[in-house]
Image (cartoon, rainbow, N blue to C red):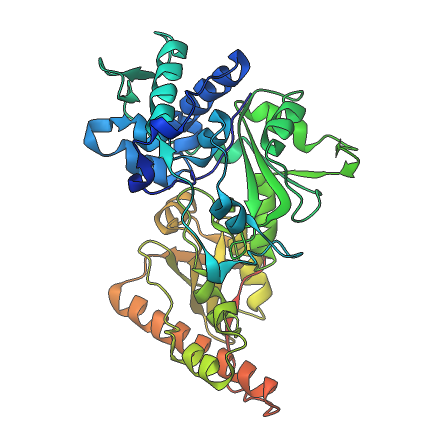
Length: 420
């Protein structure tokens, strides 16, 4: 069984107090002890560390040693050990019908973690960890660490299935365990992550299932009539789901991003699409002014530009977009109708690979062959100047339209965002 995922919710270190006198010495059932050991091993495992920035930071300090006092502050372990939530915890959990915290103005500190529970955690893990496990415990049983250094892997992307179809905002404390067990019928599940609303943290009804083998992921993605407790589920391989959203020019949330890819922040994406970021909405003229003041400059990433020559005849943007989309993930094409050359910008630094992989150029139709060459510094500078000007112009046009001004269209340069 794969334990709960995600960045651990913790309480402040100062909240671990020596108040054993007021706490009855805690005990655990055998089943709960096993869950705690499994959960701790999960925190230190490769699958979790590939995504958990907090744990990567923790294991990267103090020569890899993590003390049990720190672990005892993780919300999931507190739940398993039976640390009852104080009134502050209950107040902080209250949400409205949209899953938003309804008590934001009165956020309180969570309940303290008694030292008796820290010792209980240490004893439980020490007794449950085997010699063959990835983690080791120090002599006085106050800390633990990985036996080997963590090395990030990109294999998870191809082994993951994106699933949607569960009710929005409906989540139980054992949902991850239940879903993991359910999908365990299709293969060895390494990690299950719930997708959440970035602002409210409410469960979106979608989740990611990472399998140990890509074959199991592919089999699951092709499963028809997949259901869970009466809800019809829609599975898809994560790479395919990612590419579908990319082709639709939608914002790619961090948990969906391809390893090694480059993506705009949400604010940058909103700006490029002439939209006001949600954080600035509802703030009237002040918000609009703040949005306008944000930089619209496109990030200059090395290795994403390729210059092409040899355009002739009636070749236009759609044909160019289709040709380049066949060799790499196209961001947009800078091409002026009637010109014999232009520049394509890819979403990832694949320029050298594209040029080397197509020494004879790229053919369009029967008569046109595009020659691919590297973009020199001067041409790169000119490209980004045009791209930034086009982005600013598009945003201004969209603002004018919303205000009833109609907007201005000028020139024939086809600087378009590729949809592939």
